[in-house]
Every structure is written in structure tokens, then in C-alpha cells.
Amino acid sequence: MDVTAASFREGMSCLGAAVSLITSGGPEGRHGMTASAVCSITDSPPTLLVCVNQKNRSHDVFNGNGNLCVNVLAGRHVALADAFAGRGDTGRFEAGSWTTLQTGAPVLADAVVAFDCRIMERRAIGSHSVFYARVVALLKSAQAAETLIWFERRYHPLKATLPEQSGPA
Image (cartoon, rainbow, N blue to C red; front, top):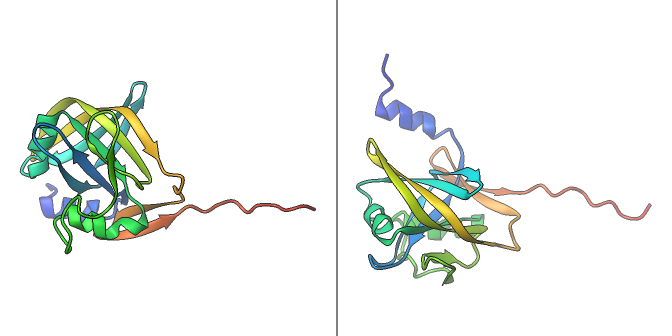
């Protein structure tokens, strides 16, 4: 029995994943999208993979600019995630505070962590491309006690459980 696209998507809805804004800036302009298809490959050299639908406008912008930034979101960023997914009342880059690091890709100043990357390689697989991106700079928030997860087609803020602090005996 073959797995249908619909049953595969249904199964994947049960795989919780961090929500990120994938952004790019350069000669092709500034653009971005919401994604959960991000994974680390290796720490030597620091490399991520990012999967993007080839029909998504961001695909060609990322490819043309040669850079991308993975901005990992927190629970406070749901409206921003919706805007970059094409939902909501605000446009991309209209909300949030933006800066850049080395590549010129937009960096969300209060992201949980932002990985500024140069694209090293792209491989087409079915409807998507896998971008292999070398991390050249990162910005980690001092407020990294929560993240935003996509699970069962909804956002879920996930807070870190901090160990209890023991006081004086």
C-alpha cells in the first residue's frame, strides 16, 4: 500500500517542530516565510538544512540572494508567524524589530536565536528544495526560556522548565 500525500501530511502533523521565520536580503530583495522544516546537520562547520517549496516566492529570493537567516520564534511571535505565512493583518517586516549580521539577511532582534547563513548548496527533491546553509553568525536572546512549536496544525508555546533553585539550608 502506497502512502498518499494526504496521509503523509496528516502523519507529519503529529511531528512537533520549532517555528522559524526564514528571511533573506540582497539583490533579489528582502523576503521571508514561516517554516518548521529546519534541521541541524553538523557543528563542524556549523550547517543547517532548510526545506522550501519550489513554488514559494521565497525559494527564488533565497536562491538569488545566496543567504538566509533562521529566526527561531517564541510564543510572543504568533502574529508575526502568521504574517510571514500570509495570514493576519500585518505584512512581513512591518512588525518586529529587524537588524542584520554578516550576510545582510534580516534578523529578528528578539528571536530566541537567529542563525545567519550563507547558502552552500541547493538540491531539488520532489516539490521542495533543500538548502544547505553554513552558519556564519548567530544572535541568541537573553530571554530564551521559551520557543514556539507547530503541532497538530496549531502553534504551541513551549516554556523551559527551570530547575528549582535551592536556597540556604
